Length: 291
Image (cartoon, rainbow, N blue to C red; front, top):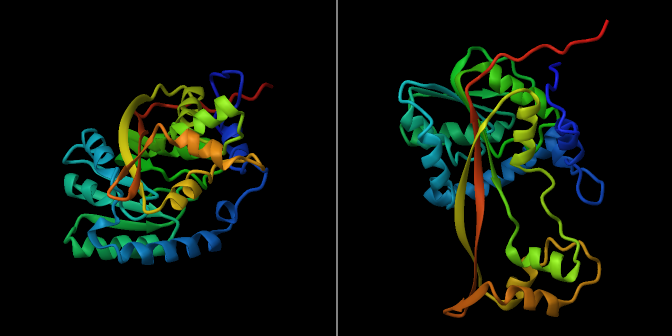
């Protein structure tokens, strides 16, 4: 175990673990049950396969651009938790070799098939949790984006990234703020909202407590959600409300400044963000136990 060298008045690794719980204090089966998580990915990736080339998220190219700016053509790179490959194939095309590490057999199979289809011959795969993996070799760069949601011992996971990378470690997350109408409902009407419980700032604070001064690149991701019907608009944009009894009229009023109609559909434009935390690996000190 490593020591936290800066307290900040809080142990952010413990806070991360506590915030794996939902707002009602429960923890979802996907967080703790590997079989449940595998079943999710098997079903999810079957749907992705039917989307053809459009399976990459629309916001991913902007993050890809910033990620590739940190990578060099001769790098040997490890990607943690690649999922359906939002950043995998663009990275493989850019670097000398890419190793994908994922706990899901379905994910590994999907990526292998897509890599072969794209004729990418510089990819290898490890079916294992990052937390339990003894990396077979050091990599020039280790990165993971949106892959930390099941990681309970987040401090050790970040330490392993630091110790396994020889040139650069990169931890990324998509981030808030929440859609603006939720913020308005919270501040103006006192509504309880299911705000995200874990975000990039927790990772940055954990790194800081380890003595790692990570650079922070914030990427704006403008997006427009489109709804076919008014009922769909209201339902989709009430899902984060925790207040038991709320007024539909309040929801409608909160949405009005942000929603426009276009050819019979409802469009909600807003901006969320992605964050890349990146650092040159440093030597970390063993915990000092008082005698």
